[in-house]
Length: 364
Ligand SMILES: *Cc1c(COP(=O)(O)O)cnc(C)c1O
Image (cartoon, rainbow, N blue to C red; front, side, top):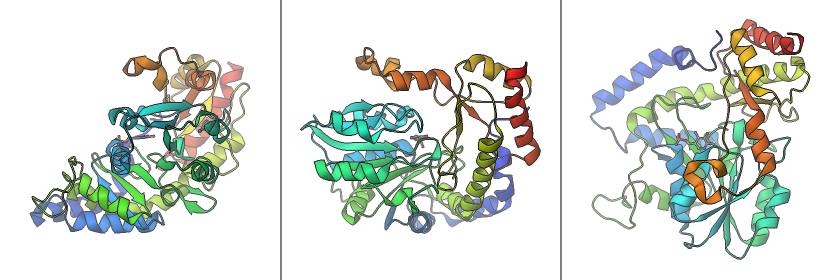
């Protein structure tokens, strides 16, 4: 069986360096808010071509802290993509703000800029964009719309470390960008971790307070903050892995290019191939109208797949208040998407087997 993703294999090349870094942290006697975090924040800001980086406990908190720091009025409407992981939207409702779902472009499956202006009201205060599956959304166009209407833009780049838009890294565009270093992401820790990047010094400073009880000087609290810090152990491990993000993304792009050239199966829709080298290819998401059959066939031929995601946010029990909302493009995407294995440790032979298997689906 070709596994969808094997984290043991993903981390194997770095294990010795990770063990050495971990031992250094264990022996340092300093585990929270120390030099390991400072070093990683500096390196990740530089990598993202952003001026500031603030580490957080996870990606969900990174989004929450950005919105909290923006201090938006309680009845604000926040535009969000209807096709995304629930973590992009939970911070909005958690802070008693109102999510306004916008349908994706059916081809890219990312928020459709043409539909954003249609839902802007006097209560709209911000847009959350998501670089889902590793591809940048139409951020330049969305920033133009935001500027025209005086809105903030927050990007959820939890799946897009290293992706670019018009040659510039995704962490450098929006008012603030949130990253997750959950172990399965393109840059993954060995536990939970996250970060925000921004070019807004005041916003970065405020988030530095908010992630640590609203305090930077011990026992002196400027804000009612939370506890969401990226710990020294995870920061040290991320510093080990960061230099390998680009070569790993290059390998992902090679595999994606091969899939795009060689996958030939009737009724199968491939992801857009117009920006192969800008996309971080966190996931290779195809669509098939007979998904269950397609998945079962691949499984029987030794290819494990995954579905990102099986149920739209507005149809989840957690969001009952939206149960009567009908978003046909998003709902169809959720019925049809399948993610093929795509990770830096796949061998050429495995890629060939996956392509051959998919291409045999019509012939069975
Ligand atoms: C993983 C992910 C998150 C959340 O990150 P955590 O670190 O698990 O909190 C948010 N948004 C998207 C799109 C993600 O894929």
